[in-house]
Length: 305
Image (cartoon, rainbow, N blue to C red; front, side):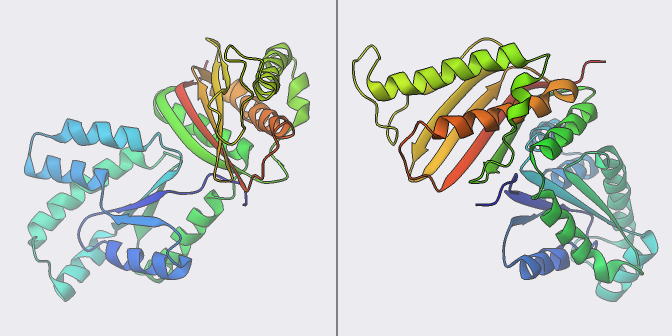
C-alpha cells in the first residue's frame, strides 16, 4: 500500500452548462473509476437555495463547512466564461433555465466560488474556449498529485484550512495510509527541543501499555490477542489526547485524537511522531499486517499569531 491521504469523494460544482457531466465522464475514464465522483453537492445546494430563496441556506452552509474540514474530500468548481456559457445555451438549450435565469444563477455561483477559491481542497477552474479541451487533464493531475503528499504536505494543507477558517478550524479529520517501510516515521522528532520530553512520555506509556496487555498484566489478568483486543490505548488530557490501535483483517487501524493543535508550529512534528510511534508499536505485535491506516481527528486546528 502506497502512502498518502487517499481521496474519498470528489464533488463537481458549477452552474448549468459549465461542463460538469463531461468532466464527470472524462475523469472516470481517465482514472478507471478511481474516485467516488459526485455531480453537484453542497455548493450547488447552497447556490440554488439562495437563488430560489428556499430559506434553508444555513443548513447547506453548515454541511459545506464540515466537508471543507474533511481532508479526504475535494471540490472542483467549474465556471465557464460568460460568452462560452451563452454560446453553449444557444447550441444546446437548457431544460430548466432561460438565458436570463441562467445568467442569474451564474452570478450566485460566481460569488460563492470566490469565497471558496483559496481553500486547499478546492480547485477553481475558469473554463474558456482555449482551455475547455484540457480541463479534464488539469483536474485529473491535481487529484492524482494531491494523493501523493507525505505527512509534511498534509500538515501544510491543514495549516491552510485553519487559515481559511480565520485561524481556527473546528473538527478537522483525515485518513492517511502509511507505507510498509514507514517512510513518514522520523526518529529525529523525538529530539525536537520543544516537544521531546512530551513525545518520550507518550511513547513510553503507549509501548508499555501494549507490552503489558500482551503479557496479561491488566486488571483481568488476561493476555490480549493483538488481532482482537481493544486495549491498545493511550489517553490523556494533553494535546495528543488519544491513540487507539485496532488490528482487524490485516489492517492496523490507528485512531488519533488531537484535542488541540498549533498547526503551523507543531502539527508536522506531531504527525511524524505518531508515524514513528506506530512503527515502533508494530515491532511488539506478532501479526501479519497488510495495511496501516492513520485516522486523525483534530478538535481545534489553529494558528497562534
